[in-house]
Image (cartoon, rainbow, N blue to C red; front, side):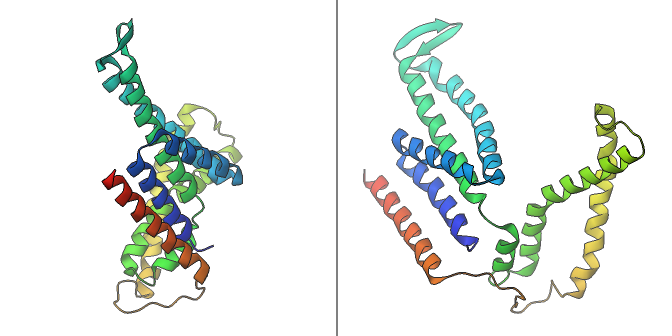
Length: 230
């Protein structure tokens, strides 16, 4: 699958939920995200991340709208209004649907394939910067595990907070050293030179996927027009 296909689908899902702003639509997209999360570990982690991000959003909406509605139904330190609670729930559900669907669908994107695909249409230095940001977390996690394995092999207790804190400095130094080690090979490859790029391993992108992406974009445009009219 071309990395542009799930990336386009994720963007279209976010825009659709945001524009329609309907609890049934939000619930449907949230349900789709939950179903897709069973595809693999990466998708489950994306769903969990989305749900964690939704918690503070729900709390903020509740604090903003619940006490200041027109129909008060209870008073627990602060007024609790039914219409304010409904607005908070509606906004929170939309945020959850946007976040979870975008993250879960976007988790199907292969970062390496996406970077190779972008090299054909985006300046190489910008592609390298984006790729570095995308790869930073996995690289940091791998180096973190390596450092802890070295400490454990030396008999150092690695499960205490003190040992974890002592890992931060070698982690940062190691990441800086990795960046400096990549600088010279990048200069030799002429990453800063202008001109077209060629790929040793081109990314497959079938006509069917291209048509599907255009159909998704057209459908989102139609949704935006209908939402503006209604």
